[in-house]
Length: 196
Image (cartoon, rainbow, N blue to C red; front, side, top):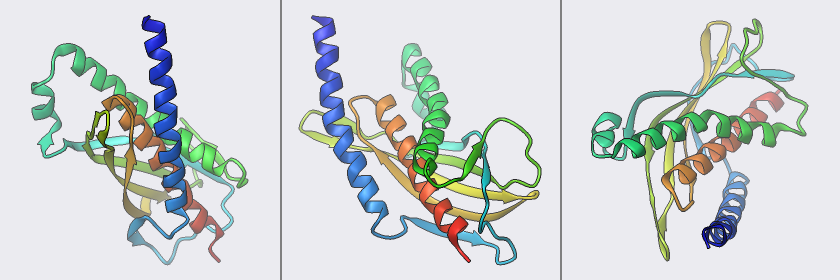
């Protein structure tokens, strides 16, 4: 019985997440979904063939309107452990989104190493709106991202955007939103690498 329930949940999850991902990708084609904070005219990514992707950073995180500490204080110990696993998955899903989007673009993505002379991309997450799943009525998780491009030792480009994810659980919603954040980051990088 438990296995049947898990299979049904997986199928329902696929039925919800796939259309949402498609809508997200179609939205990307309707114009930039980010706000440019900084773009130094003296730097260029045109023709770059390799980009290093730094681990996702979480800074001064707010969950909805609360600090992470306030939000966690009301959670059971097992929920707190689950949340730590959810946060750890953000980096993997963000990278997965970038990698899938740039796969056919001849841009090599580098991880976990020191790559002097190669631009670095750093995603900083500052707020997560948890969303909810209530059967018929649902709200996606929202993740606020600041994406920085570091060239040399300085931030040469910086954008902000929000990604969304819908799923049955908070962890699932956050993971979907993190992958969507990777898609958006890749779309931005494509525009910068192709600029003349």
